[in-house]
Image (cartoon, rainbow, N blue to C red; front, side, top):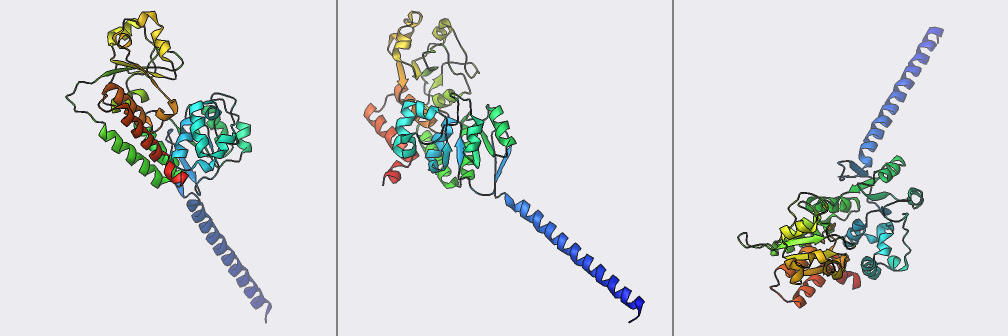
Length: 342
C-alpha cells in the first residue's frame, strides 16, 4: 500500500471517529436535556405566584405555619412532618388534640426549630434535612435563606376562602394527597351550603373581638373572621374594609351588634368594661367565647366549624346538644378519626 493510500485511510478513520464522537455527544446532550425536563414531576404555584417543583412527593416536611400543621393532619400526612412551630406544643387545645393522633406530638419528639413566636432557627431547619418547607408568606427572611440553600419552600397566606382551598390543594399535590384534599373541600362545601339562609331574612350583626382581652380590636370586611360570619348567615358588625381596626367604645355603640364573639378571651374581659355595660349585646348577655379555639381556626377549612358554632348563637333553631353532635361528627370527618382509630 502506498504512502498516500495509507494516509488517506488514516484520515478517513479520524473523520469517522470524530463523527461517532459527535453523535455520542449529541445523543447524550439530547438525553440529558430530556432527563432535565422530566426531573420535576410535580409543579404547584404558591401564594407568591412562584412555581414549586419536586421530582417526587415530599417525605420530610418542615411546617413553620401552625395552621398548615393542622391541615397536614387532615390530609393524613402528619407522618411526613419532621419539624413544627413551638406553638403547637404551647397551645393547650391543639396539643391535646394532636397528641391523640400522633404519639410523636404526645412525646414532644417532633423538632420545633423556632426561637418562639415566628422566629425560625434556620440552622436547625437545615439540620433536619427537609425536602420541603411550608412557610407563612410574611416570613420573607426565612424563605430567602431556605431557598438560598436549595430547600424548596411552599409559601402560604390563608388570607381568604379561595387561598385556603388553593393552598390545601397545592400542599396536597406536593404530598401526593390530592384525592384527600378534594374529599375535604367537598365535605366543607356541602356543610356551607346547608347554612345558607334566605336572602330576604334579616341577618344578625356579629362583632368579633381579638384575643387576649383586646375587646376594642376587631376584624373588618374581607377578613377570615368576616368569611366565617358571612358563612354563618350573619353580618359583620364592622363595616370597615380593614384586617384589624382598633375602635373606640362609641363606635361599637354605633354599630350596635346583636352578639359579641370572643377568641381566646374571657367573658369577664367584656363585662368588666364600664364603658360597654350599656351596650345591648352586653346588657342582654349576648357575649360568647369560641372554645376550644383549636376547633374553630379560620385559617384552615375549619372556618366552616367557626360558622357552624356562630350560626347556632345567632339562630338557635336546634338545641345545643345537636350542635355538639354536629361539630363532633365534622371533626371525625375532617381528621378521618374513625379510620385512624380502627
